[in-house]
Structure formats: structure tokens, C-alpha cells
Image 1 (cartoon, rainbow, N blue to C red):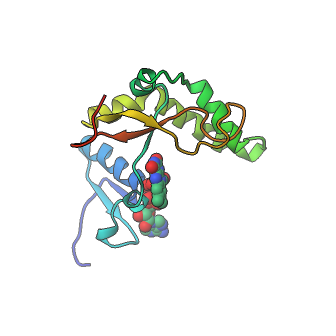
Image 2 (image 1 turned 90 degrees about the vertical axis):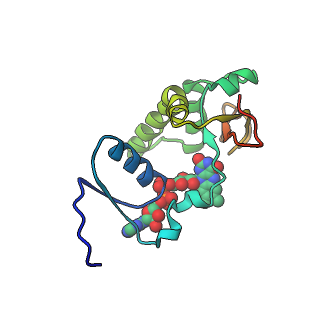
Image 3 (image 1 turned 135 degrees about the horizontal axis):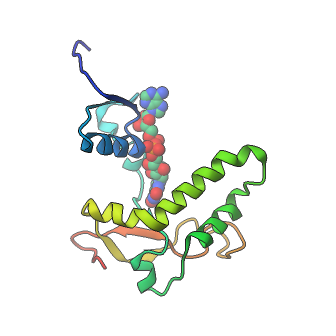
Length: 153
Ligand SMILES: Cc1cc2nc3c(=O)[nH]c(=O)nc-3n(C[C@H](O)[C@H](O)[C@H](O)COP(=O)(O)OP(=O)(O)OC[C@H]3O[C@@H](n4cnc5c(N)ncnc54)[C@H](O)[C@@H]3O)c2cc1C
């Protein structure tokens, strides 16, 4: 490749993580160079194949369906699967807590501001044994984007 490109930030990986970071950085007025091992047709990484369900905690959709959810319950569910009982689990635990806080307190507004509307119904994903003390989600947390034929709340 002969072209030269001056960037403030180089992101390796054009999956959702890389694309979201690129959106945030360009919105802040910086130039981003995105690199990926795959071709341009594969932009989006795993998200290309993904169903696109959004994990949210205590959303308006859940409340409307009478689902009682909270950060604490979601953390208990996550620990029920992950364990986090070893010293080397420290950073995994920190990451889980940060992500769950985002999903409980910020994510709904974050996607709403992007103009994304969510379907009125919430489904199950990674249901596990369905118990708050066991593995998997103990309540439905799987939100789907509304569209032309899928009504928003
Ligand atoms: C079938 C399927 C269904 C799913 N359904 C859902 C769902 O409903 N809801 C949900 O929340 N999640 C779902 N997921 C998971 C979700 O899609 C992924 O967690 C998410 O897309 C991961 O994004 P990422 O950017 O972290 O990683 P990736 O999408 O894996 O992106 C990483 C990118 O980095 C590139 N890369 C890696 N190494 C290098 C390198 N050395 N040099 C250059 N480039 C490199 C890869 O080519 C890739 O493009 C699903 C996943 C699959 C496969």
C-alpha cells in the first residue's frame, strides 16, 4: 500500500470493540486508522454473525414486563457462572463489575442517544439453570433492536 495516512489513534481490529472505540474517538474530533487482518467485507468481526441481542439490566422494557432486575442480581448471576474464586480472577472480576455497571446505569441511554430503539419484549439468553444461585441469567435481559416490523416500547 503506497498511501500515507496521519492518524491520532491506530485501532487494530474492526470488530464491535474497535468500531465503537473509533466512533467515540472520531466524535471527539480525532483521526483514526482502523486495521484488520481480514478484508473490508468482514468489517464488524463476530458482530456480522451475531444475533445482535443487547444485554441490559433494569431497563424500561424489563420493568414494563414486571421483571425485577438489578446490578446486584446480575453480578450474582455472573459470579454463579464465572466463579471468580482464584487470585488470578482479579481483573476478570473488575471487568465484569465495570461492564455490569455500564449495562445497569449507562447503556440504555448510550444506545438511545444513538437513535436505537428497543423492542418492547425482553428475551432470555444464556439462561443457565434459571436460578439466582446457579449459573446463567436468572431473569430475561436480552433486548432486540426495534425496526420496521418490530415495535419499540
Ligand atoms: C453467532 C454469534 C452470535 C452472537 N450473538 C450475540 C448476541 O446476540 N448478543 C451479544 O451481545 N453478543 C453476541 N455474540 C458475541 C458478539 O458478537 C461478540 O462478543 C462481539 O462481536 C466481539 O466483538 P470484538 O470487537 O470484541 O471482537 P471481534 O468481533 O472478534 O473482532 C476482533 C477483530 O480483530 C481482528 N483481529 C484479531 N487479531 C488480529 C490481528 N493480530 N491483527 C489484525 N486484526 C486482528 C479480527 O479479524 C476481528 O475483525 C455473538 C457471536 C456469534 C459468533
